[in-house]
Image (cartoon, rainbow, N blue to C red; front, side, top):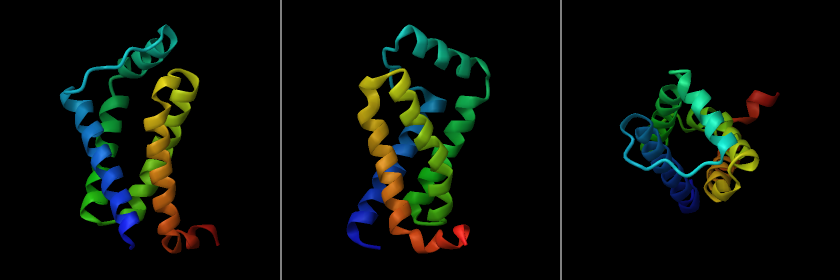
Length: 123
């Protein structure tokens, strides 16, 4: 793996670890949200399971990326996460689209660099 892919893997892994830990320990302030975005996030939070589940997925994927184990599995776990982060920001909070785009681009770039390990899924 080239050094650019390694840096991308560490960046995505560390971001997922930080944001996953935040789902449990709440050390980062919640951003200002519009009324509709707040209602959407409130509904997800009110379910009682969405944010802890996301936290576990973020932490698991982040750890796998950082320790360089089961990287394709981690990247597949993050595809729906990346998609939904981008979709949320496009629909409800366009101010945060930059981070959402960075996560999605890093995920897609790492899938591309590991494509030989994904090809058999599409045979």
